[in-house]
Amino acid sequence: MSTDTSDPENDLRERITNFLRRNFPQIQMHGGSAAISHLDRETGEVQIQLGGACSGCGISPMTIQAIKSRMVKEIPEIETVHADTGMGAGADGDLGGTGGGGGMSPSFPGETTDDDDEGPQAPF
Image 1 (cartoon, helix red, strand yellow):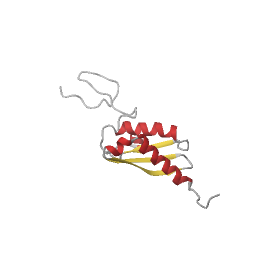
Image 2: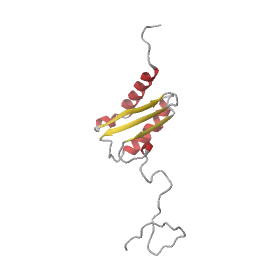
Image 3: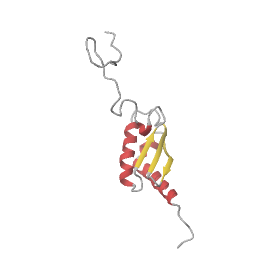
Image 4: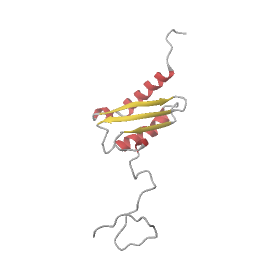
């Protein structure tokens, strides 16, 4: 056995970083960045923080979803990926209202509902 002992966590970090570079080169090409902000090898959870031009980018939610779905398939040790841009997105990059539930339905003039919280009325 060699005197170089490889640290399993550093090896996993390197594989995650290489995965991001290889599969998502557009992040860096468009002025963005992706970094591992937390890695828990025991639970298989990783937190990815997108920054730079990713913050406020209209397609960053799609990039986040692609990272989450592909990383767990390609890196067996990873079971859960949390990713966000830090720009008002919730955990996992879920922008308000896209998570399915808890949102208000639109209301229209003259429409009646049994719901007490029908939201604001349109001024026309």
